[in-house]
Image 1: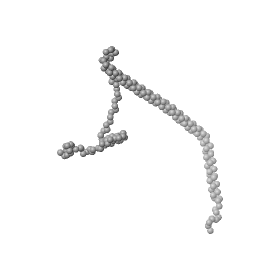
Image 2: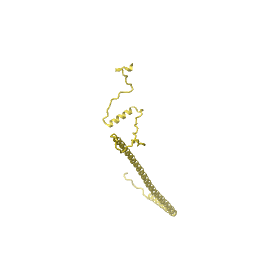
Image 3: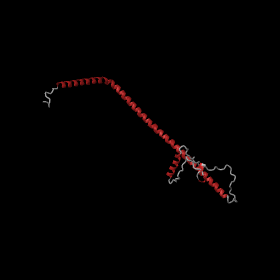
Image 4: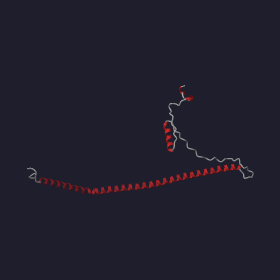
Length: 196
């Protein structure tokens, strides 16, 4: 009887759970914070995710109408209310069908617009691709022409270049020789300043 030690012989609360203070949320942000805290107390427990509410559908019109309302005289006063409910239900059904048709039209328009945009983007891309290819071909042609021009000039210039290079080498040698001679001809100083 150790578990029944409290007043009125009520069993004590399990020791694993602590009593949580009742906190009343005053703002929506606080309410959300409290919900998150409650979820995070036990992360292993799956969070309840509510199902998406089903769309309202009107009741289908009856296939066989048993109580056909006529315009004959003698209809009871209760028949008007039956007629009113039937009329309201039919108007709701027609409104629903109109809204569904409008949504379908919007979806079709959206898909058509997407297709048009996609086609326009492909056309722009193709046009730019063509322009890039054209520029690439132009550069390749210019490069080929330049190489051909060098090759044709290269044959004629090789002989002139060789002779020019030989002349430049001879001139450099002559300049070096002149510099050496100038250094040799320079007189050594006969006195050094600052020394006695």
